[in-house]
Image: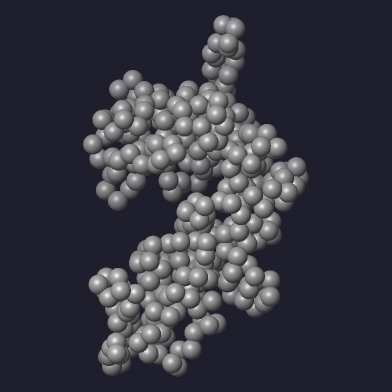
Length: 366
């Protein structure tokens, strides 16, 4: 075990971080995405301190293969953009860079300053950046070249203890960003880690803060849940904490009223976790039970798909997915009933659809 030192405000040298070697953290180097490692190498060669960070490091330590590899660097977005031509700068509140390798996207963030809290937009040092992160298990930095894990906040110890430990004080962590409640429960469901009683109580106390979160951010969180390795476990955990009603209020009400609907609804997420490749359609899990319960399949006519589409769209509010993605999920449900819906951007732009059944008898618009 090594340590990282730096000088404090008074010029005195202090121990700041624990540095774990590969024999201690036991991350398998071959599990690290090659393109992510290449990005880190390019930025380091240009003189910028750069690491793989967050959930990817957590998963690597746990022996799991991460789905995404996020990167944190001392380089500014403009500097990253100059080094990687296959990239674009995104974000308004805090600018990030997406670097593209084929169909893969890597998100690069510049180290952030902690002086303005969660909403600050200024760049800072790695020591400040770690204080901006939500929970210790996501506040680890991995050096791809030296194969070291840099731990400023005791994240490795918390992973070994299997607990979700907040970095930011409980009285402000969720007031700064209510979405952190969803993340805490999600991480616990994904890892099997314990949420300590004080953190549980704070989540229940502050849950109403989610009412004011923009729909775009809630949509982002739902998409992450749907594409996770255990969507059913996460949804069940969020429901037990009373948080799922802020993500999907209509589904929550139906689950409260009907145990049968709840069982079927949860089964859809279980089925989703077992589906891979082109057959996977994440949004289907959100709407299929509602659609099945509220659609008269004997009355197939020109307006059925359009009517069902807008009904399903209202059902999943405040989530606001792309229309074509929702249409794709609904077309698959219709296909199960022998109705093939033709994809047509031109007709869809007018809010109308053309479809035919599998017996090849066309049903055209009037």
